[in-house]
Length: 405
Image (cartoon, rainbow, N blue to C red; front, side, top):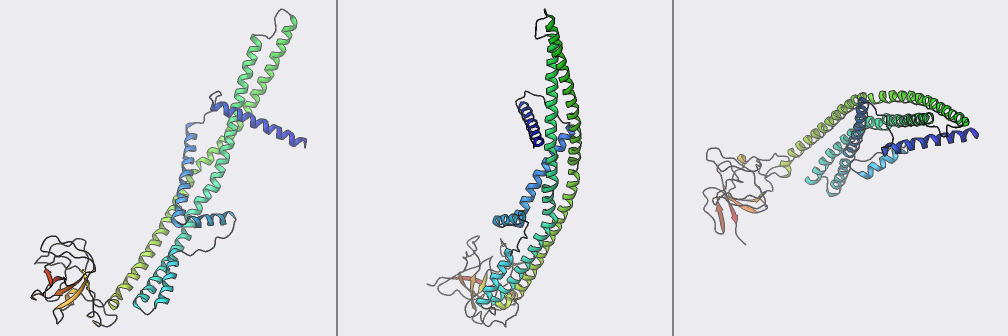
């Protein structure tokens, strides 16, 4: 018990001495041992590495898991040393909803069939996302987290120990400086009058006491200097190890890029397959659709090289029975004008007329496509159009807007 009390009192005295030295340094009343420039650069480099590693780690976690509640839950499971439960990705959840909707709305209908196909693609996308998250967590996040929770904690501990050794060294320097000043004062200016022999004896005794104090302070200074140098060397070696940490993080970064490239390549391949499946079934779903290329701004109609743009799709009873299910969509050149000379069509997107010779259109308007040579009918407005327009296999028709009420 006595030993513990003595150790506690000694630790309290050391802590108080360090606190006094630190406070005097902050107020500029005590000298501070400065580290060399190379050591300061190593410290700054280590601090910068730690700060940017934390930012990259946090943002990568946000990229892999945008839901903050899920991130907090995973953090708690890790701190409790429990296995994180498997979580359904957003793509897999969407695929589940689409499959249930197709089952309820009818899997044999065109809409139901498309829902099933898209659900399968979304499920594959969700599985690819799950693999990417797992790979990125192991190959990229885990090394960064290990550095922050392992190497950096060791570096921080040694830096705090070095700071304490420096405070002890500076306190010993200040104590030695005060002892030498008191010794010089006791030697040159005695505390008592020099007229009595007894005063000479007291002055000599005080000078001897200060000599002993100076010797003790010098011994403590040598010990503190040795401990400081040893701790500075240990801390320097740890700080120089940041270079190997950068090499390790560089390798992990390459692996993260590879896993991300693989993930996006899988997503592209799955969506390309889905697009092909939907494109092959488009003719069965919309057998009378006019197929063409949509351009943002179509050039004026030229007599030498006319450009076609799909703007309308046929509606009404004429759509039914145009072809058997599964037949590919017809091209504009393969569409012949009907026997009656007219066809109803719906405008797919808005078009602003460039001049008075063109016709402005609004989306979802119903028009009559009149073959060339047909005189204008009563109650109809006719106008030549450069885009969007419809071209048959024989001639370029003109669009007329219905004005009947």
